[in-house]
Length: 141
Image 1 (cartoon, rainbow, N blue to C red):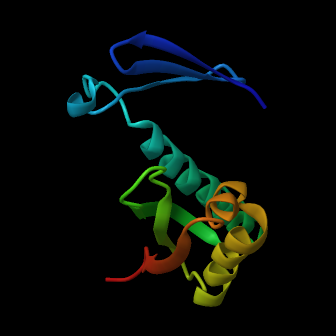
Image 2 (cartoon, rainbow, N blue to C red; image 1 turned 45 degrees about the vertical axis):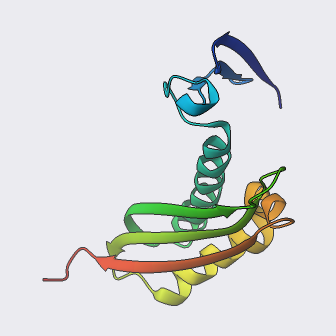
């Protein structure tokens, strides 16, 4: 896996993935940025949420769950001093579908957290990571 990060101006950087996709990262104005894109640590958090969501959806699809939507909201706390690593991360999944079984969804989230999600397992070395989920039934009144 490769990435290329090129300084643009101020505190803006064009990040390019090895697969050919780009995201502009920028700093906060108080740090010299122009707020043109997510902060680098926000990208880490976004990547973690995407990584675990990918796993959860793959596991649910393989279990033939009738999933219509999956949203993962991530909240994190960081250390007060440098390096300002993440110290707590909470992932809140909202899974929408038809006749979803809570034990199947919980198992998918647990499998991602314990075995498959490289990003969250890596961040778990410095942060306490917690998960929760809400099910929404598309047939509910």
